[in-house]
Image (cartoon, rainbow, N blue to C red; front, side):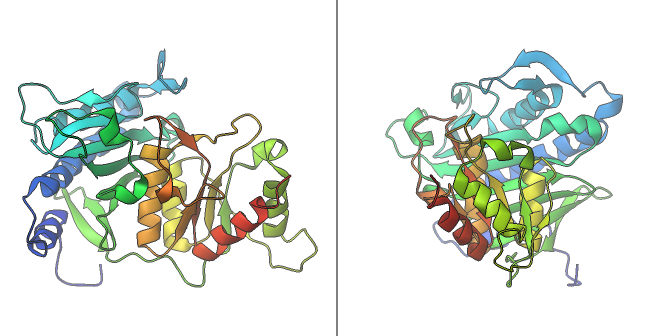
Length: 336
């Protein structure tokens, strides 16, 4: 940190709340509770190999993906950290098919929390960085209980979005529409400290792309030509981009946010509607990216303008530096 003044996440939230006369404290309560859940999950991730939290449960989730033990643990931690706050009317998790109601014994609020409890958890066995992604919407229907309609809102309606990266250090990055802020967990005092104030994507952008190139044969002609262009193989004399791919959305996006470039998970012949989930993967990252001066698209349409029809709806994703995402859209428009 370059500033001698130590700014904890709690202090940051309090100072932000003071600038909003309409604030009731409910939204701040959500962030406090997410912070608590992140600390607990970080602790368990760091010792997963010695407390039998590695590997799968033997079950599959609504996505038809193998459920990891840490997935269920993280979902339970987040749900229990949030259910009693009085700030939420319901929740949505990647691991659960339907919306998660707030127990009757607890008060209900005006916000919806949508989250991926542990993105990239299949990588935990090999000690690769993983993360939690979250999105907050305001309730739009009448009544006390949250409904599916409250959850199916366009990304531009998000009140806040963020992620927690569990890597060599644990970082929480979030935006509430007034810039992007990054906090690093100091395990010696158990506090998230402001380490990256007012994050902005590099300009000029970094010359890096992130994509799983094993799927090249399944891609559209436009996507294939884009890759040839980024590699400098299309005869246009462009300096080639470097490839950086981890296979964990949070880790790959975090690098793209800090270094610039583009992260891509395109549609292909096997997944024509894309693979990533709109509500709790693409939309939160899109909000963060745009707040940092970047751009996010499904290849044709701004991610934040997409209106989901189902809570687990999938989408292609191109996110990163504005110039490069625009370039990708131009190539995709020429697909045959």
